[in-house]
Every structure is written in C-alpha cells, then in structure tokens.
Image (cartoon, rainbow, N blue to C red):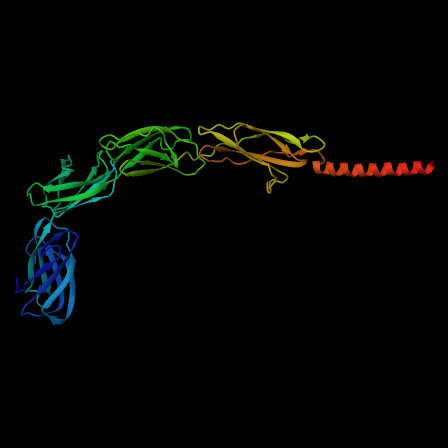
Length: 405
C-alpha cells in the first residue's frame, strides 16, 4: 500500500487505548507530500467499500517527505486496526499501516462509599465477547457482552468493605490477552434515620467504609457523643443517640475512626416554625397610680417535639425600638413572666422558638396597658419640691409669729 515507512509514537510504537492520543510520523521517502490529506481509521483493511472514521485531516502547502500529527484513538475493538493516509492529489496511492488497540477500564465516580453505585466502562475488548468482571479478585455476577466496537458499561453496587484502594478487573472470555484493571478509592459514608430528627429525638447513625475493628468518634456540631461504637471487620457500625440541644441553625454529624478516615453528614433538622402563642393578659388594664409595678404577662402554651421557649418584648411604642433595659425576655420556658414595668402606656408581644431554632410570628396584644400616672423619678422630684415648699411655709409662719410677739 505504498512505499512509506510509517511510525506511531504514543503510548507505545503502534498501540494505544481508546480515547487516548497517539502521534503519527509518516516518512514518504522519495515521494514528497503536498496538498490536502485525510487519515482514515477502520477495523479491516481499507478499500472503497470499507466503513471508515476520519481521525485527522489537513493541508501541506510545501513539499515535504515527513509529516507528524496527532489523533485521538476512536472507539474500536481489541487487536488489529488499520490507518490509511490518503492524499487528495493521489488517492489511488495511499500510505497504510496497522495499529493495535489495547483493552482499558475506567470507573466513576471515585472516590465512593459502600452501598453506592459505581459505573464500570470498558473499551478495546473483542467485539461481541463475554466479559468476566471481578471486584478485589472476587468474581461478580454481572453479565456483560461487549458491543460491535468492543465496549461495555456495567453498574456495580459497592459491597461492604473498608476504606482504601480497591480494584475491578475485566477479562475477555475469548483471549487472556484482552484484560484490564481499574483502581478506585472507597471512603467512609454515614446515614441517619430518621432524616429529619428534632432536638432530643433518638436518631440512628449507620456507617460504612471505615477502618476494620476501629473505635469511631461521633460529633454533633462540636458536641462529642458518648459511648462511641467500634466498627466490624468490614468497617461498618450502627449507633443510636439523642440529638443534643443547640442554637445553631444548621447542623452536621461527623464520624471519624482511628485510622483518620472521616465522614460528614449535613443533618437537616425539622424546619417548620411552631405556631404563634396567643396573648392573654394584660390588655387594656391599669396597674396602680404611682411608681413602677410588677406586671404578670400570660400567653397560651405552644407544644413542639423539640421543645419550646418564648421571647417577650415590652415597649412604649409599636415599633418596639428602642427597648428599655429589661424589657426583652428570651429563653422563657413557661407561658408566664413577671416583669417590673415603669409608669406609662405600654405594648407587648410574644413569640415561640422551637429546639431547632425555628421561630413563630410575633403575636401583639390587641390593646395597650397602663402603669400608674407618675414614675418613681417624678415622685422623688415631686416629693423634694413638696418638702421645699413645706420648709418655706414653716419658715414664713415662724417669722410672722416672731414679729407678732
């Protein structure tokens, strides 16, 4: 097929794996090359009737006896395949050579955890052949037959196994030469049941892919969970604990073993806000006539599996800003609160907060309440003025009496 002495420089001199790049150097000897060219690929020797794939094309503007270019090895079956360099000026005199395709296996995703599905992709195997797939040297029960181009795709659920490097091997039934291996990493994984626990609720954590027979430390946010479990020989564990109380809005569970393997689970706590409490008293009431008074605030009780606390605010304006010192009470565990309130007209509101940090809407008391007429300060000032007046009156009276006598 011509007088060329072709050479492939890539993974090896005349072979490679599907999807990788190979470099072709064509030396034409005494026959200079010029003009447009096309490089064709096929499974059988190329003729006019052969089904081909164009892997490269270009144009040579100057005469040359050596041409180097790269191409990506197309999807093709194991063993001998054919490349042909065709010149537009002399299509009847092509340069041809043989290229050998080698088997290859790839996995995705990597890393992954036990119980997850791994996809195994094979290329460069014999066409229409049965493939034996093994995991860590043990045969799987997956039935695989390659396509007409020697490719296959298979899904495998990773069995319980320890963290670290593991491998698949795919081997053709028809020839022992067509086989390939692929390594991938197994990392720990954890899951929780139920998925939406509340504060104080029991939750079961299950772990896979940790080191074998290793003590596992479990942390909820920064809180260490007591009675840490130990993994079995396959790196598995199960442990039940109560969700601790925390003020954080987002939470995570972290499990780590003695070998340094770690898995994190973002724990979604229940996100529904509790119902708003209803105000009971005070409403449109007056407390005393002089000075500040102790006022008992009451509202309806709210229930939630994660627990409930209340926030009470008292203000002299409907914006509730600014609040006087002591007029905001948070973390209340009962639906009542006794507060010392200064004289004046006041408004109050209350809301509920559950153990997961979800807050209800504010409930505003429908009518303001009043405390006294005068504040303590005014009473002190008024009393002082009265004393001064009395002193002056007594002194005036004493002067008149002395003058009279």
